Length: 242
Image 1 (tube, one colour):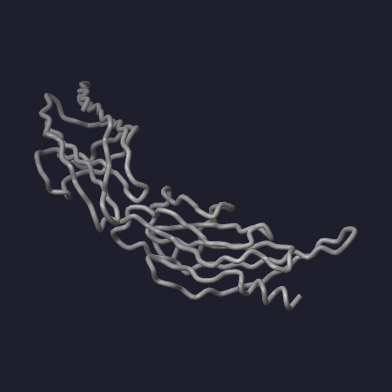
Image 2 (cartoon, rainbow, N blue to C red):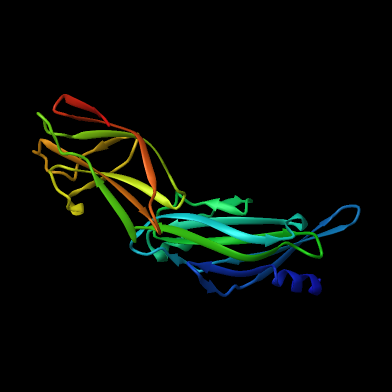
C-alpha cells in the first residue's frame, strides 16, 4: 500500500495561472471492495487555492490539464466560484468533469477554485503533469459605436439579436446609452436575445446609442454577420436591422 501511495503522491504535478506555478498538496484516501478477490481503489485529491481573477475579469475561459496514463484510472475535475474570496469555500462544487479541458465561459465571478480527484485500481495511476486555468479580462478592449438613433418616445426596453464569429479567447458584449456619447460610464450593459429593462439611462431621453465591446488578451478579431434590435417604450417600438 505504501508503494502505491508514493506513486499517487506523484499523481499531480503543478498548477499554473498565467504562467505562475503553484505548489501542490496531496491527500491520499482509499476504499476497499470485497468480492471474489480484494479490490483496492486509491484516490488522490488536490484543491487549488482560491484564485483571484482580478477586478478587470470579464469571464473565466477554460481549465485544462496535461495528463498521462489516463487509461489506468479516471481523472475528475470540479470548479466553484463566488464574487468574494471568503465565500468560495462555502459554495457547492460543480462537476465532475471527466474531459481534460473544461469550458468555464459560464463562470463570471471574480474568485474561483478547482479540484482534481484521481481514482485508480492500478499500480501506476494517472499522472497529471500540469493544470492551467485561463481567463478573459478587459485588459485589451476595442469599442465600436453605432450611430445615435432619435426616437419619438422614451426607451424603456431593448432586445438585441446578433450573429458573430470570433476567436475563443475573445468575448463580445453590448451596451446602450441614452445620449450621443463615447463615455463608457454612461452605458448600460445588456444581454443578447433577451428583454433588457433600460434602468441605467436617463428616464426622459429620446435617444439611444449602442456600443459593441470586444475584449481579450491579445488581438481581437471578430465579424458581426447580422445585428438587429427592437426598442420599446410608452406603448411604441422601433425595429432596426444592421
